Amino acid sequence: MSALLTPTVDVRRADQRLASRLSWLDSKHSFSLGTHQPDPANTHHGLLLVNNEDLVQPGTGFETHPHQDMEIVTWVLQGSLVHQDSSGHPGVIYPGLAQRMSAGTGVLHSEKNDSYRSTGERPTDPVHFIQMWVLPDAPGVTPGYEQLEIDGELLAGGLVTVASGMDKHKGASAIWIQNRHAALYAARLRPGQHVSLPEAPYLHLFVARGSVDLEGTGGLNEGDAVRFTATGGHQVSAIGPAEILVWEMHATFAV
Image (cartoon, rainbow, N blue to C red; front, side, top):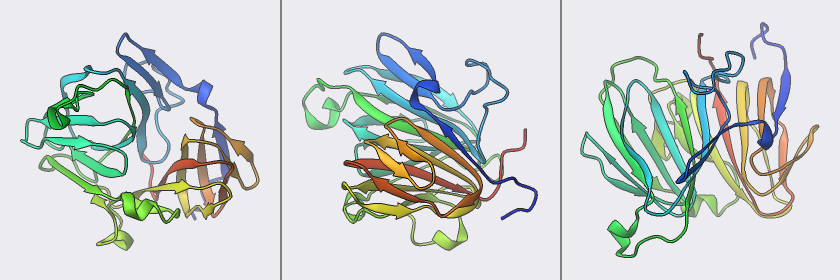
């Protein structure tokens, strides 16, 4: 742990998030990005620049748009999301599937709630997902795409390594990201189950579903997040069925 960092546990409640609402989209943003509702005091935590919770209505979605020099991880909670990009990587993302897109030198992609393309049935429900962005170690990498089914591992109830670029996770993470200082974990917990958070200079805990109890802090509900600095090892216990996402980060974004 860096001696220059002050240990802090910063709880951010769900209703504190920035929000965007359109006819087809309900989006909640943990961080301010660029010109979107600019808040220079809330641009990132550690290496995490985006933690968006999106609800996209049936038959709609994000039309083709560009990204560059970003590692983008998408985690679906309900429904399915169709991904298409200019590098020729189509995919359908659904709960229990780890997915990563490396934007690198530049990529165009779209994300839509139109899973009828693969199922033959037009969707009737929204697709609910979390999208997270971290910067790569270096700009200009070749764009890439990776996905892997990890639903079986999640059944065990512990922290499952979803995405990582850290040496300790080589061969053990579901998907690989181009950042050697960051890793994402997920856990699906039954009532009363608990996990211990890793220790790192920066941690980000997000309650994707349900409610949990955080050791030393108390109850956290769906949509709540906690930003840890220079600490960790806390126990997270499920109050009811719950799903959490945890970023472990050993560096921070230089602003």
